[in-house]
Image 1 (cartoon, rainbow, N blue to C red):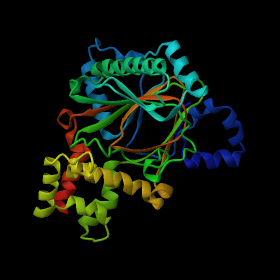
Image 2: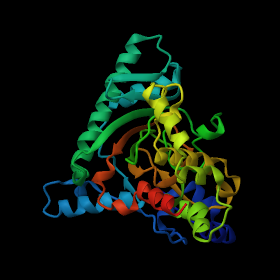
Image 3: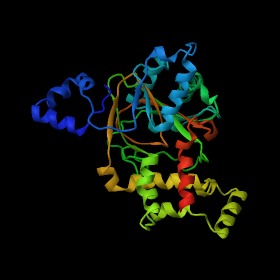
Image 4: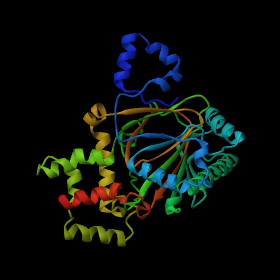
Length: 355
């Protein structure tokens, strides 16, 4: 059941003695209106809005793009991606019978390759590759029409299968999914292109629980922009150092490293200043205990069989619980944006001018 219940509602439920009743009747959450007001919205869509032949679809498709770029989540209570029952059964039963999966299973469309599991059974690998290939192709086909204004100006990144229960996973701090963060890839710089992710909850009975915080533009203004505007020197130094133009010697060394092909050994050499800032901001948020504890939050529960998509470089997010999910990532060209002024790269470039 999708839920975005604010703390003030929970206080009233507790006062009225209804908390336990709501917990066993979660469908009542639909009637609980959030008390918080935010620019970020969850936009619920039904299949009738997927018809590309509708006379107003071009206008609506542009609105969908703009909503995503502003930090909204587009939510499909009934997933538009059809997954065969036998494929779902294989994905669910394989993990439950100990097929050797660990962490996320990644599918690389360009290489048609699956990684992230123990390769001791060739038939399992082939079946996984076939299922993930079909899933990836289905998402690409749907979004090519649904987000028509982008004109498929994207690079198809990894798809993933996430069979592990998210709650309580033993991961290093910077790899934890349950800490709020905006996305950045350590070894796959985007150079200002956007990270769009499409998710499917394939768990037959359990919601996938997220929490989100204010969007990137709001957070970076809070931690960096406002301090620069007031000529304060207490902005995080690890972020300020990236915004400021590097010395000639530093730029020369980085250029030489890239020329020599050292990017695989030192991933940071492949990053632009923008990518380095986004990577450091990702780490900064995860390591900031005060932010994690006290920032404004919105809680969401995505029900079985649903899908949602979001620009995860824009929306600070965390996954609190849930098991069995599929996901496809797109790196959408910054030149394809319908509202380029809201893109994180535009925000970072503006900050850099003031640093």
